[in-house]
Length: 559
Image (tube, rainbow, N blue to C red; front, side, top):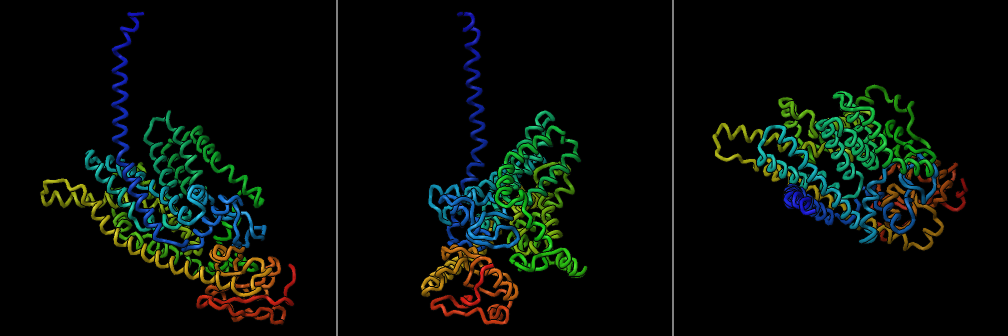
């Protein structure tokens, strides 16, 4: 026994010492991404607290459903914003088209902090903070692939994380809880996993493809554009011959494990596991058709626009997606990233199998597909909400590209120091003022909208008997008005008054509230079947520009 213990005892301290040393190395390695996460989360949270109102109705929709979820009502919405998917009732099951992950992210902090917009914003900020360490990870690997030493790689990677923490599109997206941030985080992680699957031994690829499937499932629960990332992964896997049947099966199993329950829920709620309205969005001739009741998108009407209009829509979408979504809100990093990414990928083959290349490739694929297949819908945010992974890729490419220019200048001028801090600092300094300007504009708009809808709700409730038995309100902004009044609301179609009357009878909706322009109303809200049926009501205290009309009792008939 003594001989046995004597032989083992010297190895035990060495094993413990080695394990402790490994833990210390791991702790040191994780310290920087942890600091980046905390810094980014704090910045996003501070920015979110400047925005007191969900300034787009998509964000308001996610938050309202999250509120219903945590208060025990389930995944339901009180706003009927589209008539493309039955049942046409309110309240109704939520997410006939959009995906639920943003609501789940918002609901988590609501269970602790209360069902408020602020709680949802803080939850989104906590998730958005992951973009900084993810950007750090991608930039560190790309810098290493370029042959930079450990110190320069660490500096460039840390600078990329800080740049992402102040990038305008991401700061604004974290302030408005919607699908943008969940898709950005999951999509970026997907691209990193695809790159890792190309770099590891074949025996480990199945595990990585399983993880990729799980992450693709999460990305799909955020936005349908995850399909295009999946196709990029499939193409890369087949093109590099790294995708085996076993790895593909693992990816499919992982994806179904995450998305399967949601598919079954949609089957039970809507009669189909997949959103039928996605095809409608591809055939839009005008974005107002999203709210169409009688006049819904059709292939005949879409093709009937003619080649000139079809190509014009695509050109307008390409300009909007490039300039309004990327080059203006993220000007410094977007311009530097596009130029730097093109130069680096052209001259550095070592980067072409990395996460940076995959972020740029998948982002450009999403840009092209949304531009060509959804040219009208994307003007209202299709590409904008799916651009997060591309923004991360552009930030990495911008830092590495500008750093290459710094190195060239340093060699020419014979600098003694490497100045690895210069590129990320310069990009951050150029980005921050633009981000603050964009945030100030969003915060101002949010405050004005909050005051407007609070005032409108008070005015509507103050009119005697106006809302008694009115059913859901017909309005041009159903999500905002439903939130403000606490009443169900339905979208007002930009169609003839007879269509509005038919919809009103179907829903039992007797009050129309116009907060802006919708079609040619209120001038045409006059007759149904030759009779005067809508009466414009005076609502003292309502904000300027608001028109309220009620359907007269003699014109009300059940649908």
